[in-house]
Length: 544
Image 1: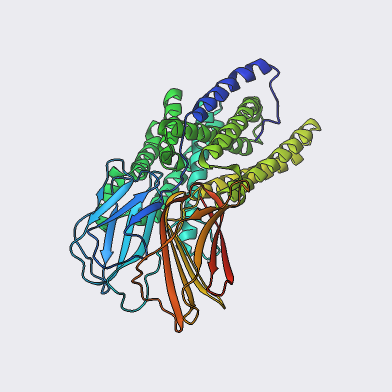
Image 2: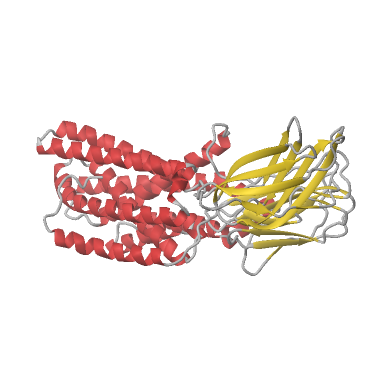
């Protein structure tokens, strides 16, 4: 970030260059958009963990955003591992729902497992259990969704995925930035020209290798039930596959078309960054064109900064190149950091429903780390400028390399950010507590803003009899002025075999939009037993 070398005196020119960026960002933010990140399941029929007397005729899944029209499936598997039907799932018209027609299912437990690819190119998998008739052994348990998140328990394969994304992201920015800056250089000696060319070829090779590594480490989790037979569909029928193919073809074409014509070079840079833009979070937002344009501008600004900084370090000891490059790069770096800050802030406002999500999501934590690194870069920038004024070139060179190291850390952080969902997926709540006076089971599905199914089961000692009342309250912690919302639960005929010796079970259920918005909630269950003793259970949770 070398805008510390020389700030142009003509501030009017800077304002004229920055003003269009402000106008564009204002226009983009003025357009309504919906923030999701990765697709997640918001409704399933039948519900997870449901027990039915009559078999369902269909499995219906609804997601919170569009999914790819290729490589999806729903499979229903019986107790001995056989698929209940060979029919294929169908995608609805707006690409947010899947249905699978079922034959007459015999009594027993079934695993419903699904696989889709979200609009931003990330695979989404999940499984849950349903039961037809009385269960044979144990009650069905709520399944889980596969999600991309950081964990200390990640295996080698997951670490390799993140490493490949970081390396590929750095190679992309370094290559496109290097090509863009090289196209602006003129009057080079033969030796200098060969160094420019040699570094460009090296970065081209690095990008091809890292891109192939990304494809190798990610393609298998994107395939549907057809496995390798669906590779053609992956690379021709999904956004991420088309992005990979376009990026690979452009990277290979670079060995032939680059360094011949300045316009061709710049068009190639723009095309490669565009191919990357359609492979990321921006694909999950509407209006898609505005989100993609914002992402492309951010990538272009990052490429100018990364490529230019790398070029400064490489040619630091070549005085003629350094003296020509520094004035240009100082202006471009200033513009780049302004554009990066504006587009980064705009993306954050689009991706996160509330800024306090920065404090309790992995994506937010990584973004705060990135901001901290940028602040360190600003300190480094000031130090380098001070040393250059004092003509301490050796010290400036050292801090320049520190600056380069901070840049690598920022790029690595962003490489991980592109794989972690800005907003985590909601998961069904399944809470059970064995109390001294009563036992409680509480389930909320899908446990997301909007309509939900609430199930409450209470066990009291048989000698006590039926409770005088069981109340379920939803308490919204983010706004204390909102009174608790009482969920109108009613008794229902519970067929599940989950008895406790010497205890009588009382089951209640309700469905409706009693959790209308995202945020921090406390689920409160109040039980009044026949002796007028009130038992209160509370469970805190956060939904997104």
